[in-house]
Image 1 (cartoon, protein in one colour):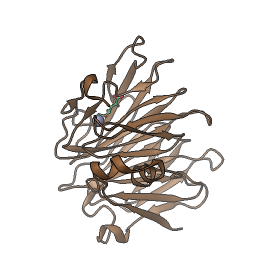
Image 2 (cartoon, helix red, strand yellow):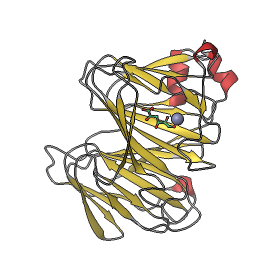
Image 3 (cartoon, helix red, strand yellow):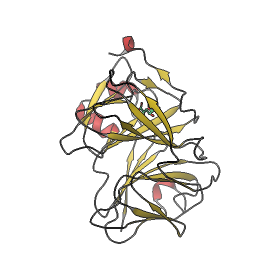
Image 4 (cartoon, helix red, strand yellow):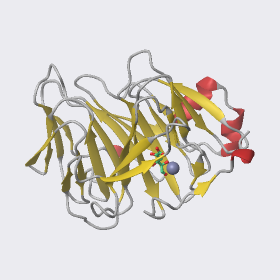
Length: 280
Ligand SMILES: O=C[C@H](O)[C@@H](O)CC(=O)C(=O)O
Ligand SMILES: [Zn+2]
């Protein structure tokens, strides 16, 4: 079993504005993360957020140490959150087993590990989405159920953006050092997320789109408000959002997404709303 790690350097706003579609995707889009039997990590230099897809189909997949962190153990100086968007499975944390059903999550504190991953049924494998950021203290490991998530209702049918933000890793639900993680779900027919758009230079963000039909596409908008670009994403693709970039999308069909942030504060509402007049 190998842990594959690819590294993403930081792309600034002037560079991003000059990139073509391929260049934008190379800088910001994470493709093909969820592969049967594989553990694929992307180490982004945006707040050193690590984003991974883990699909156990046979032997237990394990993250113990990766050379990119320069630490003996993966979580020696990091915290992590794992959300299961597939069949039921088990995440083991330092030998303790946590059963994670569909859309259940676990927050894992600094110093824990190794992390092991198995699926209950290899024919309907778990799809573990992992997020990890540097940490400065050990917060307790917590199994987060769907019921525990704090729910925030936003938008309206008239604006095609009626949705519920489920906050999983959030100060009101469980302690963390800098990770914030949640899952946004839509009312049928609502297709727009995060419009009106916002930026928050204090925190980077990463979106993972999921729950989509094979032919459904997300037109995900990014860039500085006055220089917007879009990337077209399919099911299970993720997109990195630097602090200077908007992050908003419209789907051609049903979808959900997991958002995660790391940076200077954990105030979910600390965002700078972008006036519609500023968008270009
Ligand atoms: O900074 C917060 C993030 O962009 C997301 O929480 C936005 C989101 O889930 C939504 O509007 O649907
Ligand atoms: Zn945001």
